[in-house]
Length: 446
Image (tube, rainbow, N blue to C red):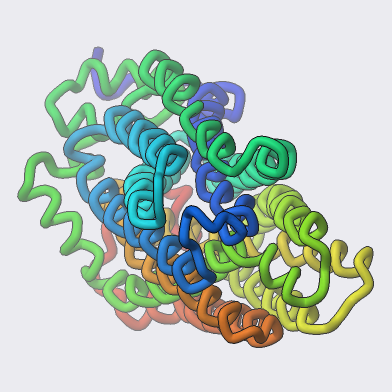
């Protein structure tokens, strides 16, 4: 096999198995993240567990702190250890964490289980994003990212459905036992069918396998200039490249945008039911709002992906953040139930995909050899927002002011819009010699 052979045309059909496996893994990621918010009222009402709103917010922040560590570690190590082992390990970790929560005698052990889940949840997301960015058809990377991320919200809806169906009659512990399913279902499928990155295989000296994978899925065959550098030195080189000319000013802006977006995603996912209950809605209606906002998220991913492939992910992310701020501010008002459902659904259309388009922009800012590391650090540093969001929501709920909670989320959305809007300007201001990228990626972040 020679490096000059032309691969077949790449399309959604040729890479569908890869995107489907990533979809399944991220579905379980979304289910595990949203299980906590779905059973939050039952956790607070269980006197044996010892939860208060402040304790619940702290436990939620421990989950996202685990995600921060998992994302930074996975994004940095995936080009060294490989995509498939880290996807498998991440799924196993958050399944074990869910099992620990199911048997937890008190808040301390429960928090440890959520931290363990967070390590796996944080590790999975940047790897899945990197896989989809690498295998996506040309000029369809944002749509492919959006398609994959619909699974997160489908998982969130499944978690809400399980919480509504199981927790009232059988208790919240059985809901967390459902979180063990990923290890049983997803791990065997990923182990058997998920291909390794051709770039990673090439960097490890396994060129024939790299070319075989590239040819099977219609990818360009990897070359030395685009493959990640092997070994520990390669990890440090990839991190240093985040601050190379052309990216050194854009990198911190992407971190800020990710911080704001993840504060919104995890703050809302954790506290929306309680915020709505504090606004006067019933318990069952308040939990249903979580399903409604995730349904909006699924629609938003498809709309945002197609729109971003045409107009660019930066523009779409900025506009979506501003629309999220408007929706969050509207929820301060005491709306009729039907109107409230509509506003929550429409806000979900913008909220989640605003953050995902930050990832789509990130995958186009960095050269292929640094893409996984760049995504890992954007998701990892952004997880500080995911740590702050649940904690901040808990403090607001403890203060009894639901309106302040919605205002806080609106301000975070405006911050995200400003940060992502400045990325193209920062790239032009800091541009020196730009790393060579495939033509499909050139200028795509603008």
